[in-house]
Image 1: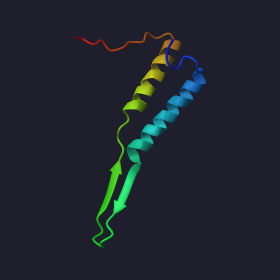
Image 2: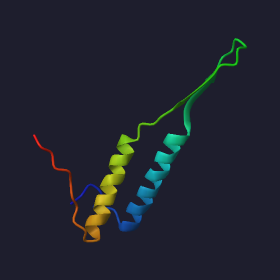
Image 3: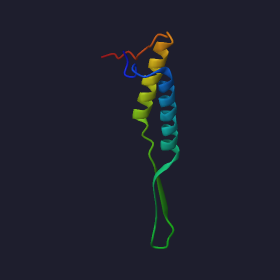
Image 4: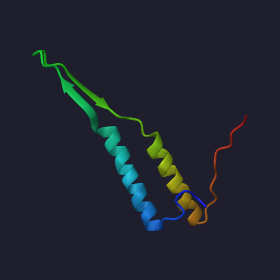
Length: 80
């Protein structure tokens, strides 16, 4: 039983597509823009490039879809 096992396949693909759109918006859209008010014209734009949680959710959805299609789900092997 995976994290997304309660959702249908169509719901999973729709959620994955929305997460991919969110990653695209997060990487390309500015989160903050400012300019200088003293007349110099200096401008600053900051982008939010932290997509770790979204990528993890997409990986979980892909693993659930792979398991439903009968593919073996491989997880990383950690050596301690």
